[in-house]
Amino acid sequence: MKEGAPAEAGRALAGSDADALPTVTDEALMTAYAGGDATAFDALYVRHKGALYRYFKRQLNDAEANDCYQALWEKIINNRDRYQPDGPFRSYLFTIAHNVLMDHFRRQGGIAGVTAGVTARATSGAQETDPDSLPSQGSEPHVISERTELRKKLHALILGLPAHQREAWLLRQETDFSTADIARVTGTSEEGVKSRLRYARDKLKQGMARYVS
Amino acid sequence: MSRKTESDRNESDKKPEDQSDWIDELYAEGQDELPPPALDARIQAAARSEVRRPWYLSPGRLTTLATAASLVLAAMVIYYVPEDPPAPTSDADQASNTAESPAPARQANTEVQPNLSTESLRLSEQELRPTAAPQADIAGSRAMARSPEPAAAPMESKKAERFRAVTDELAVIRAEEMRENQPADPAGLVGASADAAAAARLAELCGPLPGTAETRSLNTDAVDWYLSVIDAGSDQRYWRCQDGAWIELAEPVFETPSVEQ
Image 1 (spheres, chains in turn red, purple):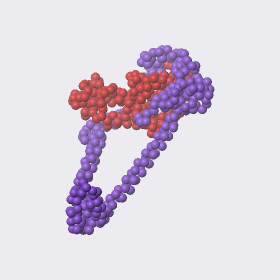
Image 2 (cartoon, each protein chain N blue to C red):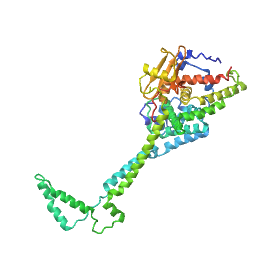
Image 3 (cartoon, chains in turn red, blue):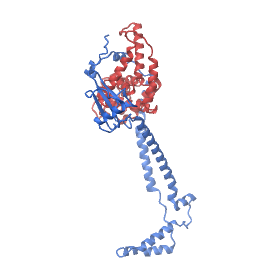
């Protein structure tokens, strides 16, 4: 798809169903949606909804995550006319997600206040001392349930990380972003991102160590 | 599944993209969590209704239309609302005005023009006199014709007062935010140079500096400062002198805070 040709992109995608669009780039889909093709938005939404939803879900409670997730897509929809495909769409998407998250924290009284409350919720859920060894991934029901429990504990620990570390770690997990990409999305330096990732990983390992032999 | 030990020091030599981790694997197993279907439906319905909306009713267009409409109305008000008609003058005044009006032109090159100033004074007096001719003015418009300035002044001063109040309040909030975000800086390092004198001040305030002269580094900039220590075989650690003791930072904070994100 050529850039700067939204009308052509719209015509090319019009009438296609979402199944026929996996080879179309995100940028072309967004340009097509800006040109009036709702099918393009559906394809775009299906591609990115999981990562974005989990990005918010791992940092907020359910209601707040749903609100922020919806606010993000409202911004995408309302600003479709201003979209310029001058960079990767995923970076554009997660930059808006980051801004929505920061706006939410500001309304809640700043990152420090929110983190304290989140930490309290997280640590209260991760206090169990269960010295089971880390079960290997398998299909047996008891193994699956143990893995599920471990994942819940991991999610609780993630929620208890400092906000900046948590966000950097989640962006690394949910996207294919490099440290440079994460730095651009979060408005910080690459060195800062590397340190945050390192600290986050170390804290999560320390926290999970009590659950594994 | 093999599980890496805590010898993550070796991993720091690898590129981040090459590091696999059992934590990452455990997290990845839960990456099938999706938003509730009702939320999906709501968002996709909103997206569809936006593109079905006429182009001139999209949010961006509406703002542009409203702005354009405001400008057009303002232009109409400026150009089409008639100005206050000049106050009617008596025949004697009109005759003297006619006689005197050429005078300033003749006298312009020779002397100061007292006639002009007299004429303008007379005209201003006439403007200030209430109109003698019967007019279908309501009381409000007559009051406006007499003294347009005082009627507008109270509204303008109220707006200015409100604006000042909001600006002052914002300034207070910003100042509070700046104070909250200020790092502890007993040695006055923010905005200063990280030299031996600064290190000596820190030692006096909080005791011996962590690390050694070879492994530590004092970092300052316009808004923040910290001491970093890289011991052999370990990761970088960050410290700040606060309340008479060295406090290890949970995360390095060395970014210029943005005002608005």
